[in-house]
Image (cartoon, rainbow, N blue to C red; front, side, top):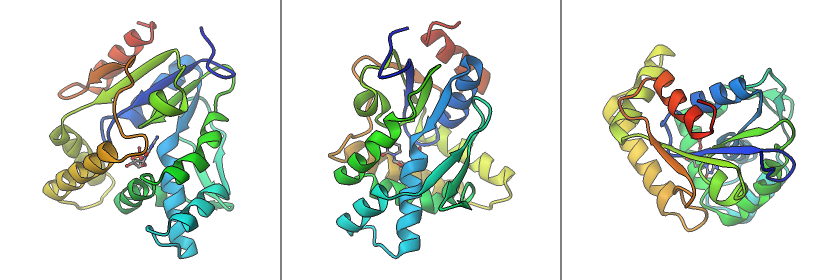
Length: 227
Ligand code: DC
């Protein structure tokens, strides 16, 4: 494999709810690769800002928060979701809320926040290889990745999936509200000036609308030459 930095990288970008989290975990497990959940870093920045009383429109404050983030992803077997610690505190569940995701999308529009998180993301690239999950993994963070996937699905399919996940977790939500949130988040992520969400020119686009997780994994494995 061609090395990108220190080890081979497979990037998986796409909008919220397209199934990237599950697929990247499964892919990393199959290949024995490390996993970077870059969205977690934006979520952690938003949570740390909230805890420090830094407003989401205070650019310098947010940049400072991103630069001094004290986080640890507890090592787990390949492909398993990491436990996330912030200043020693387990925030795995806190960073997964809809509010935190929405706040993350707000801090992520700031180029200087993105710059502050860039090297931290590249540092995840160590042997034997990395699966990187995000919005700009193939376009900005790992432009030389050997394989680039852009995983997408219709907004309705993504809202439906998220609805089922939340109901399973005992969280009562309205599907209409979720659809509205997803559309708003897509709009913000795709129309921002800094690293907008879009497929890299050399990405393979996979649409998971109407497909089960195993079918999507099959397509992704084929796309990375592992069918
Ligand atoms: O993937 P996620 O839902 O955990 O990401 C939360 C937000 O973080 C997302 O709405 C946009 C931002 N993000 C980003 O701008 N760039 C990334 N590489 C990953 C996430």
